[in-house]
Amino acid sequence: MENATLSFKYELENKTPRTNDGGTTRGASVTDFPASVGIAGVSMRLLPGSMRELHWHANAAEWAYVISGTVRTTIIHPDGHSYVDNFEPGDVWYFPKGYGHSIQATGTEECHFILIFDNGNFSEDHTFSATDFVACMPPEVVAQNLGLSLDEVAALPQKEVYFAAGPVPDESSFLASSRPDEKDIMLTSMHRYPLHAQQPRIIPGGGLQRLVSSKEFPISTTMAGSIIELQPGALREMHWHPNADEWQYYISGQAEMSVFLAEGTVVTEQFNAGDVGYVPMGAGHYIKNTGNTVCKVLIGFNSGTYQSIDLSSWIAGNPKDVVETNFALKEGEIEKLPNGQLFIQPKSI
Image (cartoon, rainbow, N blue to C red; front, side, top):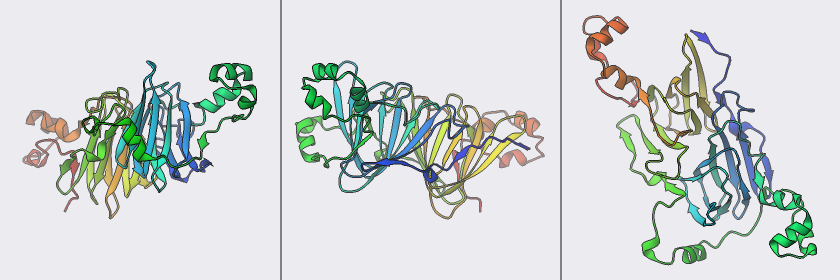
Protein backbone atom coordinates (compact mmCIF):
# COMPACT_ATOMS: atom_id res chain seq x y z
CA MET A 1 0.00 0.00 0.00
CA GLU A 2 1.07 3.54 -0.71
CA ASN A 3 1.12 5.92 2.27
CA ALA A 4 -0.47 9.34 1.86
CA THR A 5 1.44 12.39 3.11
CA LEU A 6 -1.57 13.90 4.90
CA SER A 7 -1.65 13.26 8.66
CA PHE A 8 -4.92 12.45 10.43
CA LYS A 9 -3.47 13.18 13.88
CA TYR A 10 -2.91 16.45 15.75
CA GLU A 11 -1.35 16.71 19.22
CA LEU A 12 -3.83 19.28 20.53
CA GLU A 13 -2.83 19.31 24.19
CA ASN A 14 0.84 19.91 23.25
CA LYS A 15 -0.10 23.18 21.56
CA THR A 16 0.87 26.42 23.36
CA PRO A 17 -2.41 27.72 24.82
CA ARG A 18 -3.99 31.12 24.77
CA THR A 19 -4.34 32.05 28.43
CA ASN A 20 -5.49 34.92 30.68
CA ASP A 21 -7.86 35.66 33.57
CA GLY A 22 -8.30 32.07 34.63
CA GLY A 23 -8.88 30.52 31.22
CA THR A 24 -6.83 28.59 28.68
CA THR A 25 -7.75 27.46 25.20
CA ARG A 26 -6.08 25.29 22.57
CA GLY A 27 -7.69 25.14 19.16
CA ALA A 28 -7.29 23.09 16.00
CA SER A 29 -8.81 24.41 12.78
CA VAL A 30 -7.94 23.36 9.26
CA THR A 31 -5.07 25.87 9.44
CA ASP A 32 -3.43 23.90 12.28
CA PHE A 33 -4.67 20.47 11.18
CA PRO A 34 -4.94 20.42 7.36
CA ALA A 35 -6.78 17.08 7.19
CA SER A 36 -9.63 18.45 9.31
CA VAL A 37 -11.47 20.31 6.57
CA GLY A 38 -15.01 19.75 7.88
CA ILE A 39 -14.69 20.06 11.66
CA ALA A 40 -12.65 22.16 14.10
CA GLY A 41 -12.17 21.69 17.82
CA VAL A 42 -11.05 23.44 20.98
CA SER A 43 -9.86 22.21 24.37
CA MET A 44 -10.80 24.84 26.98
CA ARG A 45 -10.17 25.07 30.70
CA LEU A 46 -11.66 27.58 33.13
CA LEU A 47 -10.86 28.17 36.78
CA PRO A 48 -13.84 28.61 39.14
CA GLY A 49 -15.62 31.87 38.38
CA SER A 50 -13.76 32.48 35.12
CA MET A 51 -15.91 33.07 32.09
CA ARG A 52 -15.60 32.77 28.33
CA GLU A 53 -17.31 36.06 27.70
CA LEU A 54 -20.58 36.73 25.87
CA HIS A 55 -19.85 35.94 22.21
CA TRP A 56 -21.15 34.32 19.04
CA HIS A 57 -19.82 32.35 16.08
CA ALA A 58 -20.92 33.46 12.64
CA ASN A 59 -19.72 30.43 10.69
CA ALA A 60 -20.25 27.38 12.92
CA ALA A 61 -22.51 25.69 15.43
CA GLU A 62 -20.94 24.62 18.73
CA TRP A 63 -21.20 21.13 20.28
CA ALA A 64 -19.44 20.52 23.59
CA TYR A 65 -18.65 17.73 26.05
CA VAL A 66 -17.65 18.35 29.67
CA ILE A 67 -14.70 16.22 30.79
CA SER A 68 -14.26 17.52 34.35
CA GLY A 69 -15.61 20.19 36.67
CA THR A 70 -18.90 22.06 36.41
CA VAL A 71 -19.95 24.92 34.18
CA ARG A 72 -22.88 27.27 33.56
CA THR A 73 -23.90 28.51 30.12
CA THR A 74 -26.23 31.24 28.94
CA ILE A 75 -27.64 31.64 25.43
CA ILE A 76 -29.92 34.09 23.63
CA HIS A 77 -32.31 33.05 20.84
CA PRO A 78 -33.40 35.29 17.94
CA ASP A 79 -36.92 35.41 19.40
CA GLY A 80 -35.55 37.11 22.53
CA HIS A 81 -35.76 34.14 24.88
CA SER A 82 -32.64 33.33 26.90
CA TYR A 83 -31.72 30.05 28.55
CA VAL A 84 -29.40 29.16 31.44
CA ASP A 85 -28.09 25.64 32.11
CA ASN A 86 -25.67 23.94 34.52
CA PHE A 87 -23.43 21.12 33.28
CA GLU A 88 -21.48 18.33 34.93
CA PRO A 89 -18.92 15.82 33.58
CA GLY A 90 -20.43 13.75 30.79
CA ASP A 91 -22.96 16.42 29.77
CA VAL A 92 -23.27 17.81 26.24
CA TRP A 93 -24.44 21.20 24.96
CA TYR A 94 -25.28 22.54 21.51
CA PHE A 95 -25.54 26.15 20.36
CA PRO A 96 -26.77 26.93 16.83
CA LYS A 97 -24.64 29.09 14.58
CA GLY A 98 -24.90 32.79 15.37
CA TYR A 99 -26.60 32.46 18.78
CA GLY A 100 -24.93 34.57 21.52
CA HIS A 101 -23.72 32.62 24.54
CA SER A 102 -21.32 32.54 27.49
CA ILE A 103 -19.57 29.80 29.47
CA GLN A 104 -18.55 30.11 33.15
CA ALA A 105 -16.90 27.62 35.49
CA THR A 106 -18.78 26.91 38.70
CA GLY A 107 -17.92 24.78 41.70
CA THR A 108 -14.49 24.58 43.34
CA GLU A 109 -12.27 23.02 40.68
CA GLU A 110 -11.08 23.72 37.18
CA CYS A 111 -13.55 22.86 34.44
CA HIS A 112 -12.28 21.18 31.26
CA PHE A 113 -14.47 20.78 28.20
CA ILE A 114 -14.07 20.05 24.52
CA LEU A 115 -15.78 22.24 21.92
CA ILE A 116 -16.46 20.84 18.44
CA PHE A 117 -17.53 23.04 15.53
CA ASP A 118 -19.15 21.94 12.26
CA ASN A 119 -16.74 23.97 10.10
CA GLY A 120 -13.04 23.24 9.68
CA ASN A 121 -12.39 26.92 8.97
CA PHE A 122 -13.68 27.94 12.39
CA SER A 123 -11.22 29.72 14.65
CA GLU A 124 -11.79 30.37 18.35
CA ASP A 125 -9.54 33.43 17.95
CA HIS A 126 -11.97 34.99 15.44
CA THR A 127 -15.30 35.08 17.20
CA PHE A 128 -17.61 38.01 17.78
CA SER A 129 -17.25 39.12 21.43
CA ALA A 130 -19.58 41.46 23.32
CA THR A 131 -16.78 43.61 24.77
CA ASP A 132 -15.10 43.93 21.38
CA PHE A 133 -18.44 44.88 19.78
CA VAL A 134 -19.08 47.61 22.36
CA ALA A 135 -15.47 48.90 22.33
CA CYS A 136 -15.49 49.31 18.54
CA MET A 137 -18.65 51.41 18.38
CA PRO A 138 -18.85 55.22 18.82
CA PRO A 139 -19.09 56.03 22.56
CA GLU A 140 -22.18 58.15 22.10
CA VAL A 141 -23.93 55.27 20.35
CA VAL A 142 -23.04 52.88 23.16
CA ALA A 143 -24.20 55.40 25.75
CA GLN A 144 -27.54 55.81 24.00
CA ASN A 145 -27.96 52.08 23.48
CA LEU A 146 -27.13 51.04 27.07
CA GLY A 147 -28.45 54.04 28.94
CA LEU A 148 -25.02 54.98 30.32
CA SER A 149 -23.17 58.27 30.55
CA LEU A 150 -20.11 58.88 28.40
CA ASP A 151 -17.93 58.62 31.51
CA GLU A 152 -19.45 55.25 32.32
CA VAL A 153 -18.89 54.08 28.76
CA ALA A 154 -15.25 55.20 28.98
CA ALA A 155 -14.81 52.90 32.00
CA LEU A 156 -15.94 49.81 30.05
CA PRO A 157 -13.30 47.46 28.55
CA GLN A 158 -11.62 49.12 25.59
CA LYS A 159 -10.85 45.86 23.82
CA GLU A 160 -11.97 42.25 23.73
CA VAL A 161 -11.92 40.63 27.17
CA TYR A 162 -12.21 37.03 25.88
CA PHE A 163 -11.81 35.51 29.38
CA ALA A 164 -13.26 37.36 32.38
CA ALA A 165 -12.41 36.38 35.96
CA GLY A 166 -15.26 36.72 38.45
CA PRO A 167 -16.85 35.20 41.54
CA VAL A 168 -18.16 31.66 41.48
CA PRO A 169 -21.90 31.79 40.73
CA ASP A 170 -24.28 30.96 43.56
CA GLU A 171 -25.64 27.79 42.07
CA SER A 172 -28.33 27.28 44.71
CA SER A 173 -29.87 30.68 44.06
CA PHE A 174 -29.73 30.06 40.31
CA LEU A 175 -31.63 26.82 40.69
CA ALA A 176 -34.15 28.40 43.02
CA SER A 177 -34.82 31.32 40.69
CA SER A 178 -34.87 29.45 37.38
CA ARG A 179 -36.56 26.22 38.47
CA PRO A 180 -39.17 27.15 41.08
CA ASP A 181 -41.22 23.98 40.81
CA GLU A 182 -40.02 20.41 41.22
CA LYS A 183 -42.09 19.41 38.18
CA ASP A 184 -40.01 21.79 36.04
CA ILE A 185 -36.72 20.00 36.77
CA MET A 186 -35.84 17.88 33.76
CA LEU A 187 -32.82 15.72 33.06
CA THR A 188 -32.63 17.04 29.50
CA SER A 189 -33.22 20.67 28.54
CA MET A 190 -33.24 22.41 25.17
CA HIS A 191 -29.46 22.95 25.16
CA ARG A 192 -28.28 20.22 27.57
CA TYR A 193 -28.10 16.48 27.08
CA PRO A 194 -26.68 14.27 29.89
CA LEU A 195 -24.78 11.81 27.74
CA HIS A 196 -23.07 10.05 30.64
CA ALA A 197 -26.48 9.27 32.18
CA GLN A 198 -27.49 7.39 29.06
CA GLN A 199 -27.61 3.59 29.24
CA PRO A 200 -24.65 2.58 27.06
CA ARG A 201 -24.48 0.02 24.32
CA ILE A 202 -22.23 -2.62 25.87
CA ILE A 203 -20.14 -5.19 24.01
CA PRO A 204 -19.04 -7.80 26.60
CA GLY A 205 -15.26 -7.93 26.80
CA GLY A 206 -14.90 -5.22 24.16
CA GLY A 207 -16.23 -1.90 25.38
CA LEU A 208 -19.20 0.41 25.14
CA GLN A 209 -20.70 3.35 23.29
CA ARG A 210 -22.92 6.27 24.29
CA LEU A 211 -24.40 8.16 21.34
CA VAL A 212 -26.38 11.38 21.00
CA SER A 213 -27.82 12.65 17.73
CA SER A 214 -30.66 15.00 16.82
CA LYS A 215 -32.99 12.07 17.55
CA GLU A 216 -32.17 12.23 21.27
CA PHE A 217 -31.20 15.93 21.35
CA PRO A 218 -33.48 17.72 18.88
CA ILE A 219 -31.76 21.11 18.80
CA SER A 220 -28.49 19.51 17.67
CA THR A 221 -29.50 19.53 14.02
CA THR A 222 -26.02 19.78 12.49
CA MET A 223 -23.95 17.63 14.85
CA ALA A 224 -23.95 14.27 16.60
CA GLY A 225 -21.46 12.79 19.04
CA SER A 226 -20.49 9.72 20.97
CA ILE A 227 -18.23 8.38 23.68
CA ILE A 228 -16.52 5.06 22.98
CA GLU A 229 -14.62 3.07 25.58
CA LEU A 230 -12.41 0.25 24.33
CA GLN A 231 -10.97 -2.43 26.56
CA PRO A 232 -7.25 -3.27 26.10
CA GLY A 233 -6.75 -4.91 22.71
CA ALA A 234 -10.35 -4.29 21.62
CA LEU A 235 -11.17 -3.04 18.13
CA ARG A 236 -13.84 -0.61 16.98
CA GLU A 237 -14.29 -2.53 13.80
CA MET A 238 -13.55 -1.41 10.24
CA HIS A 239 -16.35 0.94 9.16
CA TRP A 240 -17.18 4.26 7.54
CA HIS A 241 -19.69 7.10 7.89
CA PRO A 242 -21.52 7.91 4.66
CA ASN A 243 -22.94 11.24 5.80
CA ALA A 244 -20.35 12.93 8.03
CA ASP A 245 -16.72 13.64 8.82
CA GLU A 246 -15.45 12.32 12.16
CA TRP A 247 -13.41 14.31 14.71
CA GLN A 248 -11.90 12.46 17.67
CA TYR A 249 -10.47 13.61 21.01
CA TYR A 250 -8.61 10.90 22.94
CA ILE A 251 -9.55 11.39 26.59
CA SER A 252 -7.51 8.50 27.99
CA GLY A 253 -5.45 5.51 26.94
CA GLN A 254 -3.60 4.70 23.72
CA ALA A 255 -4.88 3.72 20.31
CA GLU A 256 -4.07 3.06 16.68
CA MET A 257 -6.20 4.22 13.77
CA SER A 258 -5.81 3.55 10.07
CA VAL A 259 -7.69 5.66 7.51
CA PHE A 260 -8.37 4.09 4.11
CA LEU A 261 -8.57 6.64 1.28
CA ALA A 262 -9.14 4.23 -1.66
CA GLU A 263 -6.74 3.35 -4.51
CA GLY A 264 -4.33 1.53 -2.20
CA THR A 265 -3.85 4.55 0.06
CA VAL A 266 -3.93 4.21 3.83
CA VAL A 267 -2.61 6.33 6.71
CA THR A 268 -1.92 4.76 10.12
CA GLU A 269 -1.54 6.91 13.23
CA GLN A 270 -0.78 6.25 16.91
CA PHE A 271 -2.69 8.24 19.54
CA ASN A 272 -2.24 9.19 23.19
CA ALA A 273 -4.48 11.11 25.58
CA GLY A 274 -4.88 14.70 24.41
CA ASP A 275 -4.46 13.90 20.73
CA VAL A 276 -7.05 14.61 18.06
CA GLY A 277 -7.90 12.37 15.10
CA TYR A 278 -9.89 13.03 11.95
CA VAL A 279 -11.58 10.86 9.33
CA PRO A 280 -13.04 12.33 6.11
CA MET A 281 -16.62 11.46 5.21
CA GLY A 282 -16.81 8.02 3.62
CA ALA A 283 -13.22 6.99 4.45
CA GLY A 284 -12.86 3.50 5.93
CA HIS A 285 -11.17 3.28 9.34
CA TYR A 286 -10.87 1.43 12.64
CA ILE A 287 -9.75 2.32 16.18
CA LYS A 288 -7.80 -0.25 18.21
CA ASN A 289 -6.81 0.05 21.86
CA THR A 290 -3.04 -0.57 21.88
CA GLY A 291 -2.51 0.12 25.58
CA ASN A 292 -3.07 -1.70 28.87
CA THR A 293 -5.89 0.52 30.14
CA VAL A 294 -9.30 1.55 28.86
CA CYS A 295 -9.13 3.87 25.87
CA LYS A 296 -11.85 6.54 26.04
CA VAL A 297 -12.57 8.55 22.90
CA LEU A 298 -14.90 11.50 22.33
CA ILE A 299 -16.17 11.53 18.74
CA GLY A 300 -17.99 14.34 16.95
CA PHE A 301 -19.76 14.27 13.57
CA ASN A 302 -20.80 17.22 11.39
CA SER A 303 -24.29 15.84 10.84
CA GLY A 304 -27.18 15.66 13.27
CA THR A 305 -28.00 12.17 11.96
CA TYR A 306 -25.65 9.35 12.97
CA GLN A 307 -24.92 6.82 10.23
CA SER A 308 -22.29 4.06 10.17
CA ILE A 309 -21.68 1.11 7.90
CA ASP A 310 -19.67 -1.65 9.60
CA LEU A 311 -17.70 -4.23 7.64
CA SER A 312 -19.15 -7.17 9.58
CA SER A 313 -22.74 -6.12 8.83
CA TRP A 314 -21.97 -5.59 5.16
CA ILE A 315 -20.38 -9.00 4.74
CA ALA A 316 -23.11 -10.76 6.73
CA GLY A 317 -25.80 -9.12 4.60
CA ASN A 318 -24.59 -10.73 1.36
CA PRO A 319 -25.30 -14.21 -0.01
CA LYS A 320 -22.50 -16.63 0.82
CA ASP A 321 -21.54 -17.16 -2.80
CA VAL A 322 -21.05 -13.43 -3.28
CA VAL A 323 -18.65 -13.27 -0.34
CA GLU A 324 -16.82 -16.44 -1.35
CA THR A 325 -16.30 -15.16 -4.88
CA ASN A 326 -15.36 -11.63 -3.81
CA PHE A 327 -12.69 -12.74 -1.33
CA ALA A 328 -11.63 -15.97 -3.06
CA LEU A 329 -12.45 -17.97 0.05
CA LYS A 330 -11.55 -21.62 0.34
CA GLU A 331 -13.95 -24.35 1.45
CA GLY A 332 -15.17 -23.74 5.02
CA GLU A 333 -13.57 -20.31 5.45
CA ILE A 334 -16.80 -18.38 5.16
CA GLU A 335 -18.09 -20.00 8.35
CA LYS A 336 -15.31 -18.21 10.23
CA LEU A 337 -16.55 -14.77 9.19
CA PRO A 338 -18.97 -12.74 11.35
CA ASN A 339 -22.64 -13.57 10.84
CA GLY A 340 -23.80 -10.19 12.13
CA GLN A 341 -22.56 -6.81 13.32
CA LEU A 342 -19.54 -6.87 15.64
CA PHE A 343 -19.25 -3.11 16.29
CA ILE A 344 -16.51 -3.67 18.88
CA GLN A 345 -14.46 -6.85 18.70
CA PRO A 346 -12.78 -7.95 21.96
CA LYS A 347 -9.07 -8.72 22.05
CA SER A 348 -8.13 -11.89 20.22
CA ILE A 349 -7.10 -14.72 22.50
